Length: 264
Image: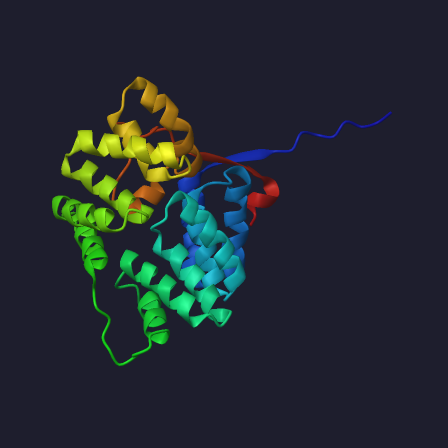
């Protein structure tokens, strides 16, 4: 007779609690443990954008430039303005000896996060005139205004930037969020619809559509939001927008862990 194997025991754990453990390992400098735990999340939620950011941090600390470039490229498909992703791509280009390309990418990172030390250092390092101070252009100033929640001012600057640079999707996303948060609901909704029509992998337009649209819009936006940012961590961290029951599904996200994963 064959003995029937017992069913494996699984443990439910809130994603927020699991991520707190990951962040503790990152803070302590234990990149191996942090990466093991992040991989558990990505096995169950392979498009979880906040986990992409944690992988990028591990790759940066371990100087795995090629790996950082790969994950940075993935993240940019969902959010073309993420500074961690641009930082990873810039460092990889620099490692290959392509100073000109690296300089251009560092500039993109700088415009998304002008006061991040590693980004500033990278831009200095690849500049022709290293003695010249870094100058904040209009994109940098708009980033500062957005982070200070000066939404109307940021929207005005981003509108001008979009007009001058129609191919910069990061400017369009920042304009979108600034319009939404400043109360320009109709304009934000129209822009969000246009953006998802062009590229359905972008996260912020779906969030705006879910917040401002009708029942059908909310049903359509539910899946991409639940796939990329179910707990709202990404939008809060990078756009300063907190998701709640009015803008996204409020259900707590839970991981299902094996006994081995719990012990990681």
